[in-house]
Image (cartoon, rainbow, N blue to C red; front, side, top):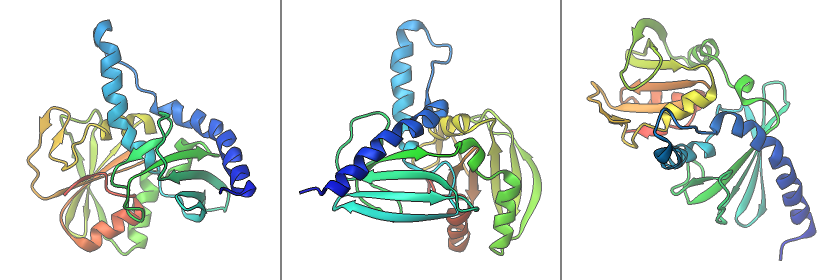
Length: 242
């Protein structure tokens, strides 16, 4: 039996969800892109399905968080910024959720490697909460990683130019978009193994690893285990690649 305390917590969270959905909808709403009217609805459904998996990832990695398990199959994560202010609350549950506001992870994510659904309730604008490129580079260096600019790169499958960095001898490509929505939209086109983006097959010189945080998509070309650990800590979980 679910206690009154748990029920009360869930009711409060559902009421607060309206706040979070407002922020989320601002940059996760997908629209047609020049398709004929009779195909727009199908196109939107396909795009929404592709982007859905990113709704269960943080747009950026909060500096700190607390976790509370409120039932045997439901958890609350409280995420705070560097000043200790509440950024976001995440609800994760094993119970099936059919609302499009909930993200679905069939295999879970690191730390919760099982099927579950998740909802993010933002108390700060995610656009402002996420780190910029200068901050990301600074965090790499704080982890003891050598980071040096190495020019620009253009990929036919991305709409913006990328910046190249040498990181401990390997290559890092960073693509900075105008907003979180555009970054998430393009990240959703990357295949699970990272060798196909949209309709483009890619032959990488080294194993690719894709990450997305806020307005940025980061591609790491290399296979250094320590570097991948640093990327997960600084940028977030890999969403595609080897």
